[in-house]
Image 1 (cartoon, rainbow, N blue to C red):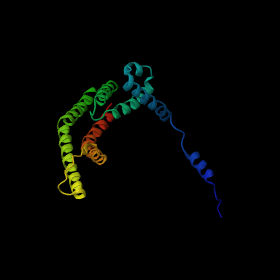
Image 2 (tube, rainbow, N blue to C red):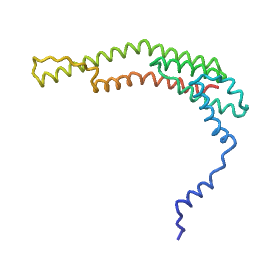
Image 3 (cartoon, one colour):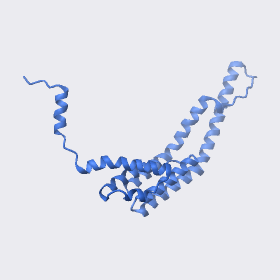
Image 4 (cartoon, helix red, strand yellow):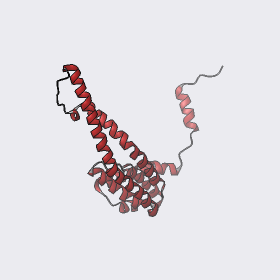
Amino acid sequence: MGDIKSAREIAMEKIAKLDEPSDEERLKWKYVPEGEKLAARYIKIGCNLVDELSQYEEKVRRYIIEGTGEILSRNIDLPRSDLAKRNNKRAMEGLKVIKNNKVDVENVYSKIRRLFTHYLEQGEQQRKQAYESLKIEFEAKVQQAVQQQLGSMVRIKVDVEKQPQFQEEWRKIQAQLDSQYLKLLDEYKQELLTLD
């Protein structure tokens, strides 16, 4: 009969079989998070990326840039507010600084800008129409419920916009409307990450 091994013994055998991490992997593990921190500082306080990157040796700079690029691209979002617009501008400027292929970066930015323009113009119109439509629908439902409860002659004015059900339904519709923009924006952000 074979020996029965404890979970610890099995785990130790598996660990022994693992290869030691390469120098490349160690550098990546150490410096990608440093790049992420640099990007966060850049977004918050606007530090100079060129100066910051010049402080690192050439062999680790690419890992710093990788971490920085990931965080900067994650900070590009739909221009729902002035803060989002400011963050977009800063993140896009930062990416342009760290990327070598400026022409391709600018081509992706053109697509992103068109998406943002569409979101702010046609998207805003869609959201207004959807909001009004939802409001009319909710008002009709409330009136119907009131008439069933109190009789057909009773008319009560209810501010449906303050009703939790209305707010919840509106959030769902907004998310649905934004999802098409977010999907396209995510594709553009992935495209940015693949550029040198």
